[in-house]
Image (tube, rainbow, N blue to C red; front, side, top):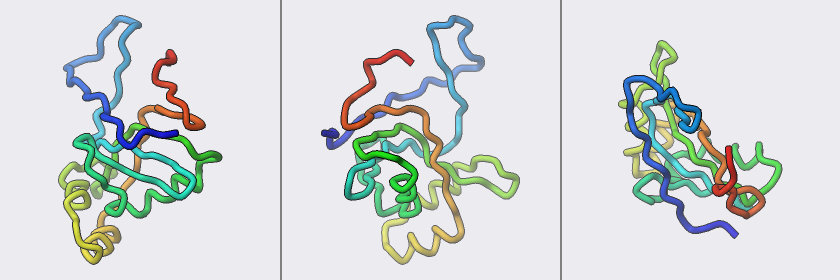
Length: 133
């Protein structure tokens, strides 16, 4: 069974990646951190403040179709790209700040988003966070 919420780890910005093998690093995407829960009846999305964002990103329902199973939780970031194909924080915030269904539909056409998956936290309903990478 999946938990109701999971607080994502907060990244620490550094000038250059650490040289030791015990450290992992990732690209800064300039997006909005989101936890995605894939359940039998669809997906749930919440942000790092544990606020539900499911209805704000309806196009991410496709993640359920792409997964072979339910009981999966991803940690990742929703991003929007500018005209040069680069992540654009202001554009993704236009999406994240939409509240009405009409605004969501309008901005969804203007600002498509992508979900960059960082980590798989649950698989088949079981936490795998204790396993080594």
